[in-house]
Length: 269
Image 1 (cartoon, rainbow, N blue to C red):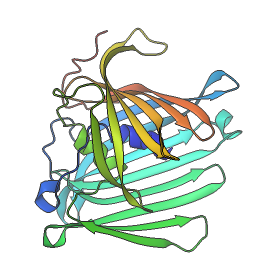
Image 2: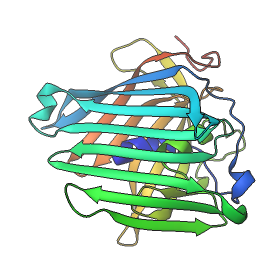
Image 3: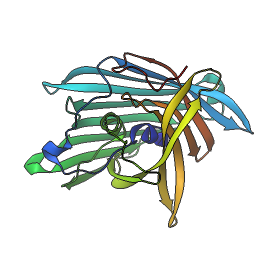
Image 4: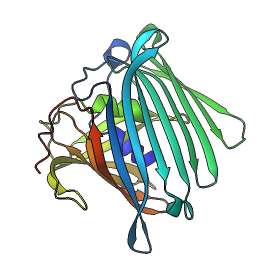
């Protein structure tokens, strides 16, 4: 599920210098936005609905400062639980200027429980990410990143990236970003694949989309982990995700969206 969220999160991000430059203008969402998804897994060549995902953003405060609080919750269904249990809750706080403050992921996946946390500080015009990771009842592990480049977690990347303008991108364009996940802080890559019209499954709705791939290196070779489709309008909503996971393949489709900031001009029907 970690990669499903990365995909959601990492659409158009490039690395920047730290401190005040970690801020970014928000043009894509507003307080009260809710996105809902249906999750499908492929077992024995059959696509089966396996669960749902829910993402909500509201304005609140973080240590007395105005902030956005974002929840992303994923749940496998009773039928899917027979094969793989998934109970993930991600929480993120960031400033109204989209500077990351705090990130937490509590995840039960299969029989393994993991807790990842990242707290951000910005001393001396630098970015510091204090990270903690715990697996089941093991002793928590701590690690720290401190440098001139901004670091982002899955959710804060998504919020920032949704306001990025991809109009100048050409197919094959690469976007490096520095991601803190609670265990490590390392560079990742997103590759722009171009534009495509996508007809939603079990629906007559068609979207104009921008298509991206999240790639990882394995034994010196790049592996395409996720292909994702985002609306080609100011909302930049992820409407479809194709995932290559350790236990098989999966897809996620947008099932509902409320409280959007901008008109859905990429929705054709």
